[in-house]
Amino acid sequence: MADFRMMMRAPGGPEVIEREDISPSAPGAGRVLVRHRAIGLNFIDTYRRSGLYPVDLPAGLGTEAAGIVEAVGADVHDFAPGDRVAYATGPVGAYATARDIAAEHLLRLPDAVDDETAAAATLKGMTACFLIEDCAKIRAGQAALVFAAAGGVGSIIVQWLARIGVTTIAHTGSPEKADLAGALGATHALSCPMDGLAAAVRDLTAGRGVDCVFDGVGADSWQASLASVARRGLLITYGNASGPVPAFDALALMRAGSIFVTRPTLGDYAATADDLRRLAARLYGHIEKQGLVVPIGQRFALGDAAEAHRRLEARATHGSSILTVASGD
Image (cartoon, rainbow, N blue to C red; front, side, top):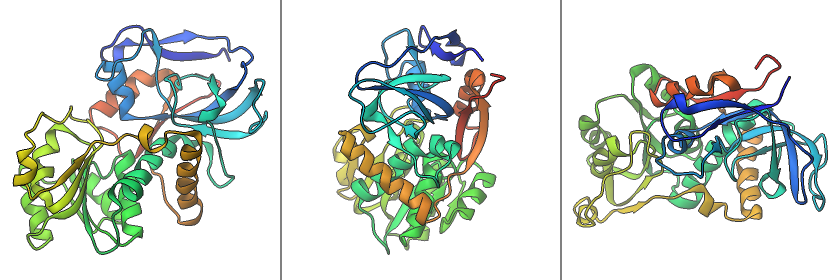
């Protein structure tokens, strides 16, 4: 099959995604040519496509994939042709059958983590890992509220929290998705309207609220998040699925109970290649040894990336979504 990538020449809706033929060349010094087997689909891809997160145009899409090393350039000593690898950081361009990428972004895959799981889990799982262990530092006996709990990141957070003994209140957009969150280990799974959520959270916590909110929704959930945090608790806003969090007065944090708010990003918690690989090792260890499940709710052919974006933005997905690479694409 001819190699190709999905890219954009202008920001906009899913219709701006185009197919472009490519001819991968031998990688230069410090770089690796990876033949993709599965590609991760993440909400941040839609932010870049829409222009919310500007990129230099024309541009590729996506930052996450898994596959096989096809060739290595000079000064690459950690990888060799035939190695199974994944990546989830670096410049955009993962929506492609093959890609030349700097070796510092690559992660070696253990045998127990297959290509589809790696594409579905690496970015979302490392995000869940640093949010829980490095950012929240939440522990057994505490309580947390998880938004979009049946989604890619949320479904991993729910499982991780359950395994460490955190009382987890999951919120989803439908009763069906609430059932999925419950099956993943949520202590309580809700699908109530946002304007009634804080009251429900207070009822479930004897009026106290939760120690931490994991909010990947953004604008639509901001007020419910503020109203659900316990005194001196932490609100982690890590995504903008419904749009950016509105501007707010710092006094609102005082009125909410002297709470803390952070807007973290993976790039600051995996700022070096060593940091990145340690974080990935923690994630892959949970998959291998702790039985962490990464639900793949949808698979789309690489050439159908525009439809995948439509489904993602319509919140018509659950779990993780991936793009597949096959001879028929």
